[in-house]
Image 1: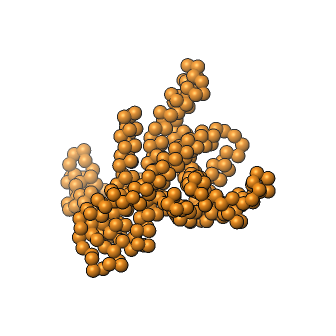
Image 2: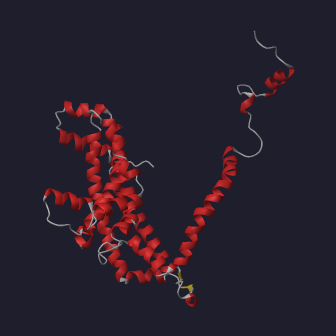
Image 3: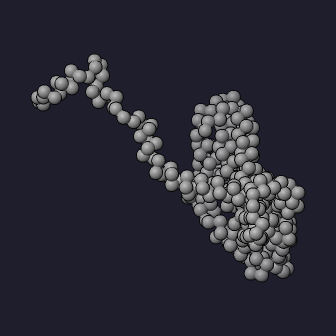
Amino acid sequence: MTAPTTQRDQTRREVAPPGRAIDDQPRAGLSETARAWLLNAPALAVIALIIGFPIGYSFWLSLQRNNLKQPAKRGFIGADNYLSLITDQTFLNSLGITSLFTVVVVVITTVLSLILALVLNETFLGRGVLRSLILLPWAIPGVVGGLMWRWIFDAKVGALNGLLVGLGVIDEYQPFLATSTSAFLVIVAAEVWGMLPFASMILLAGLTAIPSEMYDAARVDRAGALQRFWQVTLPWLLHPLLMVLILQTMGVFRAFDIVYLLTGGGPGESTNVISLQAIRTSLSYTDVGLGSAYAYVIMGITLIISIAYVIALHKRGSFEV
């Protein structure tokens, strides 16, 4: 039984234009977009205050001579802090170490994560458990991971030394963190260990999105495993690889906690990465202006590298953001 038609319903039908429901009538006042901006304005203002103000203020500090030990010499000096870095041997040395560290870690992590993703994409007993366990290194905080690796490579009570001595590989405990080459390799291993799980999961997600029909067609054309990888797998993984490369480069170039806890930049200056030098300049040397310039140089370099990645891979096909 239908409800009786009221006088109000009859009036609404008469007012509504033909072919258009009364609920679709344009409402007076603000548009949907304007209302959305208005409702989100308080949250956006808080975000701008919490994030935007420190960023802007630190940039302003980078344009000043601001050493806390010399308050009388404070003042605006423009780009002098940035220009002084060009001839600063400490900066150039830390930039070279950071560049080498970034290249080695990114290359090793990308190759290993691709291999691990290909393995985890196969069907075998315990695959789900292995996929869960592989995320543990990424879930561990950087400080905890750094302390763990320092205990492993400790020259007196290190677990690795104990294992090697127990197996008869070495006769006495070795100071792995006391020589330049071994210390550099240790921080590389620690950084790769921490970044490998996340990169593997991104590539694994890309592998699962590849249509199985592509591989079936390749097998029909008698393509071998290597040919299927180069012709099917790798082209489909260009965009996930781009994401992995950008995130890894940004993370490794700004690495601080692992290096600080393992070597502190030593021995000597052999592992003094640019982030560690920026912290030293600001806190140990109390040169806030120069330290802020360090921070913006790091940001600029990572931005340029990220743009270069996008341009290089965009030439291989369309890139969707």
